[in-house]
Length: 271
Ligand SMILES: NC(=O)c1ccc[n+]([C@@H]2O[C@H](COP(=O)([O-])OP(=O)(O)OC[C@H]3O[C@@H](n4cnc5c(N)ncnc54)[C@H](OP(=O)(O)O)[C@@H]3O)[C@@H](O)[C@H]2O)c1
Image 1 (cartoon, rainbow, N blue to C red):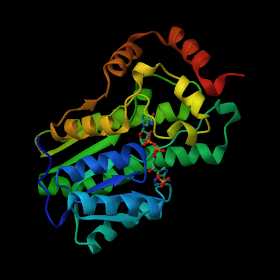
Image 2 (image 1 turned 120 degrees about the vertical axis):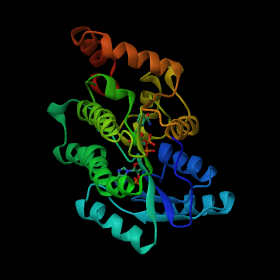
Image 3 (image 1 turned 90 degrees about the vertical axis):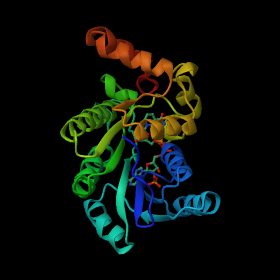
Image 4 (image 1 turned 180 degrees about the vertical axis):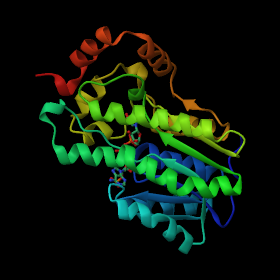
């Protein structure tokens, strides 16, 4: 299934477009002539990207600053797009973050903010923007999960569970949409050097050394494969051979062997 054709009144809404994978996905979509609406909290970063894309790619790009943990900010998005005269033809639920460390030492507010961003916002935005796509008989949704979706993750328990949710949710919704002209793709990257680990509280060294070099893929390459997979209507995109192999293995190794191994290796669980 191809991506919906670009149009002056059509947009690709990308959450978490102020940095990392989201910014690169916006660049990929703009490179295909899609007008983009960039969503995140940091306005200056969003505006800089919107200016870059409008200049270099000659496409329409605007920003909507929103904190996706806020239900009212999420609920306001359709009206803001309507005011701009835009329909969302492509939805990219990319915004996300992780907490680090054992749940028995977790900060309650931080855990809940993570679930609000990684889970609630994905469900809310899908529920808001999918019905009009189905009515039009066209649309594409890209949900950013992770290879953390394929096994429980001691040290990032809530994050791994959130990404397992995003993967399962994406596949189930896709199953409901057969023949309706709308496709759903889940992106499951392994480690990507975006500052994501540092934002979660790891040092750069801890983040880089937490997983073998062979598993790391550049954000631009992750985004290229994601948008290519979305355009082809793929169900799941896992960038990098090593990550595909690790994901396949993680699904079959018994949890009683896997969990102690993962707990021993996780930098946030080292004393
Ligand atoms: N990097 C990795 O190793 C990796 C691996 C697998 C999956 N992922 C997933 O990839 C996605 C993007 O992560 P990244 O690596 O690109 O990290 P990143 O560079 O830290 O980007 C995270 C993005 O999410 C946005 N965001 C966070 N909280 C938000 C909130 N409350 N409201 C609105 N936007 C919010 C941030 O924007 P503001 O701060 O401006 O709001 C930023 O644009 C996430 O879903 C992540 O789980 C990352």
